[in-house]
Structure formats: C-alpha cells, structure tokens
Amino acid sequence: MRPYETMIVFDTVVDAQSIQVALDRALDTIRSNAGIPGTIDRWGKRPLAYEINKRKEGYYVLVEFTGEPTTVDELDRILTLSDEVLRFKILRRNERAHTSRVTAQA
Image 1 (spheres, rainbow, N blue to C red):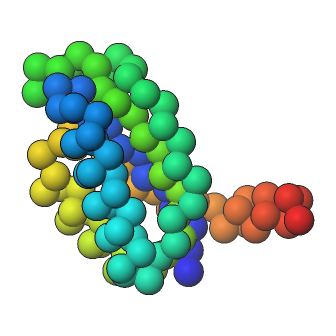
Image 2: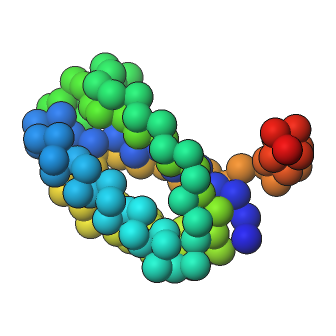
C-alpha cells in the first residue's frame, strides 16, 4: 500500500449536504478498493486562483489515504463524474516522509 493525498475543490453553489454526500462517496470508493482513508482536512471556502466554470471560490477538502494504484484509478473516475467537484488532484506522497512521521508519533 502506498500513501496518497487528494485535494478536492467542490462547487460552492451546491449545499453543504451535497458536498458531504460527494465526499462520503469518495471515501467509500477508497474503502471498497482496498484503501484506507486517513486524515480529512476541511479548509472551507477559499478564493480560486482563477475562475473555473465562472466560479470565483470553491470549498477545499484535503484527504490523505493509503491504497493501491487501482484505488487511485477508481477514485479518479468517481471524482471526474461527480457534478459537485470543480477540480481535484491526487498525489502520491513520499513514503519515507510518511514512515518517519508515523514513527515519530509512536
């Protein structure tokens, strides 16, 4: 299993409940594809660096998780199809930094 993180920018036009449903769907996708969700950091509404679909702000959520490449592929598919998501980016985290942080916490 490899550590990943994804930044998801949700459309602020949809209500908070729809954002939560879309986030839960993404987390369920991670779990159902042998992944383990980790820290979920809700940054809230923030201005976008540039307009996306005539929107000037988005609701940012950072999700850390571990999984296999197939987990990432399925999460990518689900987030692409989600109407609530303006943009997202999935990054593979440095395994050594992840391991040293876990060791330091123990």
